[in-house]
Structures are given as structure tokens and as C-alpha cells.
Length: 109
Image (cartoon, rainbow, N blue to C red; front, side):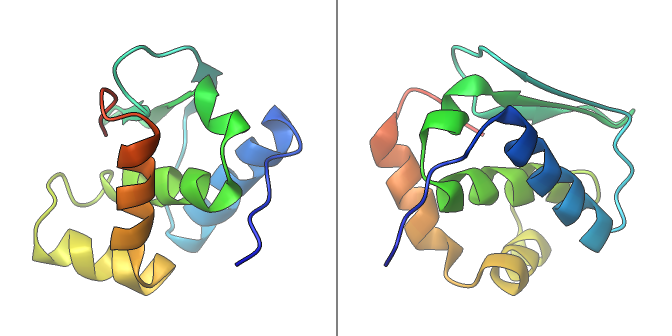
């Protein structure tokens, strides 16, 4: 498996907007900033925040966090529907979830 890093913050943001478009999700604001305890957060108003540490990680892990967070706009929990949608967008997302957890088990989604 070839793992690639993000080129820059703009490439990450473009990826967020591409997934949001695929999922028909409106993003009011998008920020990449330092976050101590989380990889990302979202609000019902359409605000998204991503941890800047994601920029130094493999793209597939960043995409996992992007899809995970965007799905919460329509599915607020991690139930069967959320898991089905994660699988539809990313396939075997559990492997990505485990790699992300190994990167830093103190941060959460």
C-alpha cells in the first residue's frame, strides 16, 4: 500500500470540500487548527474544525477523519447507519480507525 502525505493545508481543505460535495453537505466554515484532545469537531450550523496534526499524517488517515466528521452532519452517532455509510465511502474503515488510534490514543473523534 502506497501512503502519501498531504501537500499542504489547501490540499486537505480541497479534499474536505470534495467529500462534502459527494455527500451533499453544506459547510459554513472550515478551519484547520491546533487541537489537544480531538482530531476534529463539527457543529449543527455547518462549522468544521480539523486538527492541524492531520496534515503530517498519511492522506488515508486524514480522509478517514474527514468522512467520519462529515457523516455526523446527518448521523449524530456511530450506529449501524453511520457504519454502513463509512464502509460505503471508505471500504474497510476499521483498519484506518485502528491506525489513527495507534498514532495518538489520547485524541478522539
